Image (cartoon, rainbow, N blue to C red; front, side, top):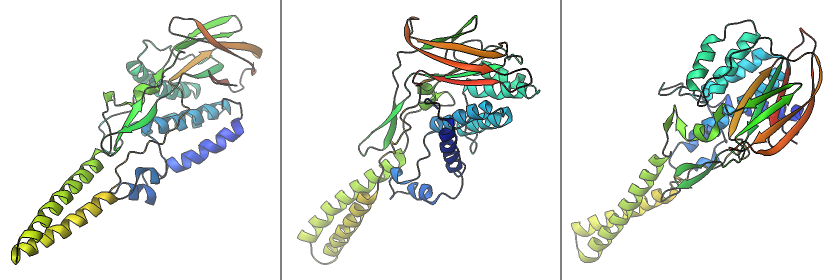
Length: 326
């Protein structure tokens, strides 16, 4: 998408969506990896919730580019499911942009997006989001900054943790025609990676570490006790010692076969911030620019592009601009 190769991007995202659609199905590799004796990194890579969300976010943009806001809305709704706990209902999706775009697509389809807009307002970390403008015919999706990465901690590398992306770029200005519009972030992937329903996460996969630690400790203790009894006792006590030795060896084997290491594979070129703007322009061809800025408002990089706004009754001009766009 950053290169403008949308045909390839669509194919790759559709392949990823086919994989994600099996997330609750009979994925044998995932089921095996949930056991104690299979490495997390052996299963098909499905990513963390924030990574799965982004698959649908990008694909939704491309559907809207093709004049299919209904399919775009379906993608934004699917993204909300990826971020929520549909099984246990412990937390709901909390991306402001997903609710906002869900409602905007409804408005474009002559529906009522007010409920989605109100949800987006409650979730927004940046204050008031702009009301929907049904007459806006130029929709611009933005991404900027550097997203989170993963690493592991713990005695066995079992604790999956996130390293926050550090981003010089904190916002932007969109310049098109005689308009200049300030762009602030709607969502922060650093926040999304490290929380569930707004609650800060610690780490995951500790259950495997507990199992490995307990079996390893039991094995060590059994080997020491069994060895002492077998060497110093006779009769029944010696048999108990030999039994402990055997149990200790089995426990050590079980412990060594347990693979609690967290899966630190990651989608490593995601942005930190997501944003959006809608503008009403007269039909015609425009030269536009996006000035990405730091926290103090200083210019960091400018991206320029040309696009055409179709005649009335045509589908919207939909643009994707990244600070990493070529």
